[in-house]
Length: 365
Image (cartoon, rainbow, N blue to C red):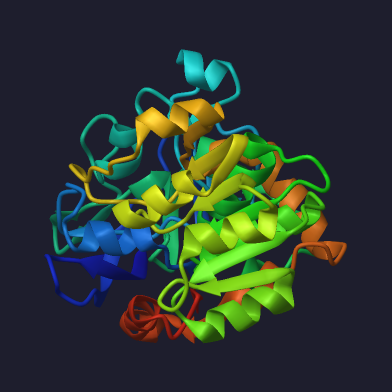
């Protein structure tokens, strides 16, 4: 069938919106007609060749839509089901079997190769193969063939035009808090970076009843939104000594912290701000080879713990419905982060995300 897709063709180039051919869904694949899809920082990193996904390729990994067809062997969904799309895993390695699929031993190959396991692609352009199956889904297409394990069935009442970010960026922040840090009610919390991932961590800290909740950024408008979403204190790191201010607010050091920036200096500040037996989580992506120094001579005295977290260490089929339920109950207003764009304006959405004009772009088909 003919589909409309945005194709990444090379470093620094805008995505090319064009008509492609899409195969019938193969074994274990679900054909999904997209309603909307989020744009994530990871998409930009791959477009700009920070991560080595072969081009040309259809990116996108926060899709939401309706099942059109199912391929042979698919048992979990059927045509007409409303679904949200997340990442792909092998399902059989030790990490997958023990409830930590985001650390699947085949994660990189399954999600970044732009190919099926047999090397084929689902898209073509006048016979030329175009990469597919990015994060098992390649949701920057009006219709896509998605691996079954990436598909999460959602209630028909849930708003598909908003749900896409629950596939990656939102649970990356929220899961780091609720699944990894697991803070006690009344414990102190700080998030460094108030983009979509950091704000999601802040919302999760509010769900966990943390207090105080501190947000750190360099953009005052984001800090104002952080206060509206539950931050009790905000710090603009351009004008204040962040570590000293956090220790002042928390009476000696923070209990739990998230770095959503991937910046080596911010990471150091996060570690230095921890109190006794504090626990910090790094969720911000940095380019491979990025190194950060910390004072191990002093940090060891705190008993601090540092976790590296991918995809919020979530099991998508259980954690995503939890977030939807929290949203519908009014406890997790992630929709406050979203700005919608027509699919034809996908490159504008990327630029607005890069400039910070938009926290979380979602393109609507």
